[in-house]
Image (tube, rainbow over all chains, first blue to last red; front, side):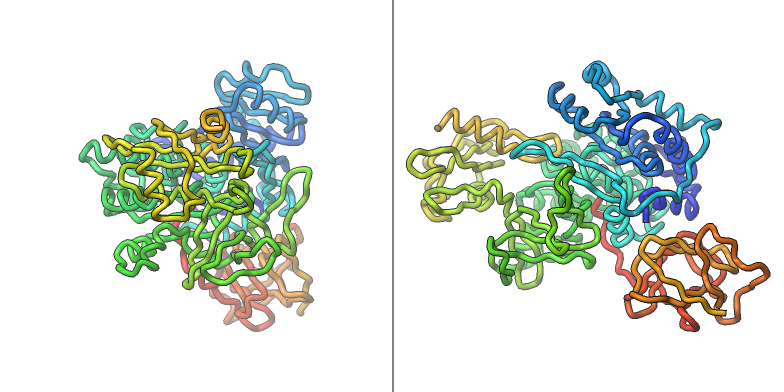
Length: 500
Length: 106
């Protein structure tokens, strides 16, 4: 199976449905497939072995993604928010390549050896040119690389995760029902194209027949306006987006009447936020999706019924599941192992390992890191008796204080239990006596005043004293990437400066 | 006439008697006597023998986007184009794969 075939099937089976844009003047599935086939010819004829893209969301994203796979070249969407230097560095790493550029990007890149540029408008014009020959929609090798995604690199230099056609198609075929979306369904996509959720939304929406409305970038007011104007039924957001959407919805009384499903993922979601969301948007089914770039998107999910059951339960163990990422997909195996590789039973924390057709676990230049198909997510987690998966954070973020491993997630959860805390982050900074010491940064809830000593006592009461932050910085916000990932490296540097 | 073929994931095949096209998703080891409309399927690109029509009992049809299995879970095909004839291994009709829809997560 090949990514291009997913689109061709959608065009054959539901060609008249609007795939992209507004109902009145959007691009149909059949038109999208035609333009992708032309893009296949255009991109095959351009120099380089890859097709990179440095641009905001638009209809050019799906056309370029499908077109690149039909051209037999990996699609490499790159973060336009990087500094000029970081951006040029990543683009240089994709050479030899053709880069589709958004506004102002060509100027930022300058001349780079092995890089040919085409701007979005010219690219779209050529895919609309009926004299351009159409590529074979069925050509393509399932083993070939469909997408290269630079992982966010919150702890180190970005690595290029390799997603092959078979990884992405097996994810889509096993999780999405072909033409399963109702004709009235529409999704708003506000995650950027260089995020795995931006890629999977293109594929899943196409295969299910769900119309997609792209937002160039996320802004809560614009997001809500589009949901209301376009009768959007489905959306995917990262946790930082959800909180801002809720602030906005709470601020006017119009609600989001068309919205039926809101999925979230990409980072830990505080229980308080999801409870607030369920109260403010009672008509919406919430889906918590857990996945990594390296696993071609979602590998576990907590569905709407799971949310409702957990929320309504008096049993603390069942209620706790609201903070879980649900159960693994039927096509994916998940186990928890200790550092020696021993499989651990329910309730015990360890490393989350995953196996399945969609799991790529491969980086450019390193080959597959997988062991008998098993991929170590480097996330810490545990399974409960019912098979619900809890994710506690990145193992790379673990703080080692005097030989004891401390999980920032656990301490953050304890901080968030305090009513005056809206957001919290915990990191380890160098310490001459202990190797590392625990420090925290918290954002007060609206109108609340946080007392550092009182908050430290509060955490000490909930956890052991070794897990109590030695210092807590009170601040207005935390450093997040625009896809909602806490930039721990940045925070660590700032707190080391202050408390080191 | 029965020509069992070696299948492998990703291989595309078409019916000799109708529009049906399939992609192999999963396959058992060894040859599979895969038919559509009671006649052996042919690789995409090959011209099927002329003048064939679906045998009685093998004319229920296929639907685009549906997955078909042999019931053991060892053979799984994705129908990439629907048609009027039915898929079978030998004389045993393939069945629709029963998959519980998952909530949309992207």
